[in-house]
Image (cartoon, rainbow, N blue to C red; front, side, top):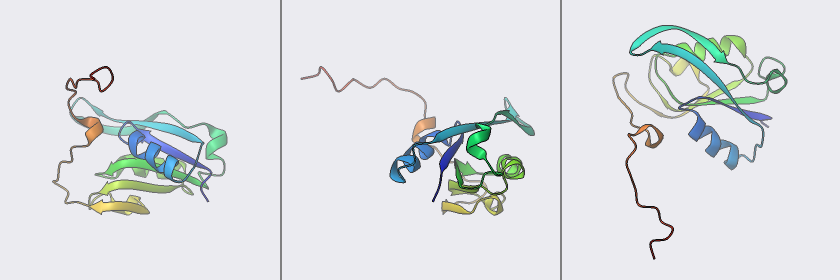
Length: 131
């Protein structure tokens, strides 16, 4: 049984919210890893860690969720910090797949995925007050 869900920001926040609701886990936190400066990939580093009490014994009982594992570098860093955590993603590319225990769909390394929460914003008429 999982004690907590930790979302990798920002892409993992929507899937983590859904997973935490479906598994009825109320303890949800985030971890932020920065590995890009504009378009250039740099050495990943944690810029916001989850609460130490939540992570406990090296992440035991914690489900870490992201939208996708690509190169695997972000999860490699997170796994070095929390080796007992369980890492899950919606999509897994071949280079990053070894970094996750659970994923929903494998895609090719060159596939670009458009997530609903990453799409360009566009105005939509509110539902309320249109009747």
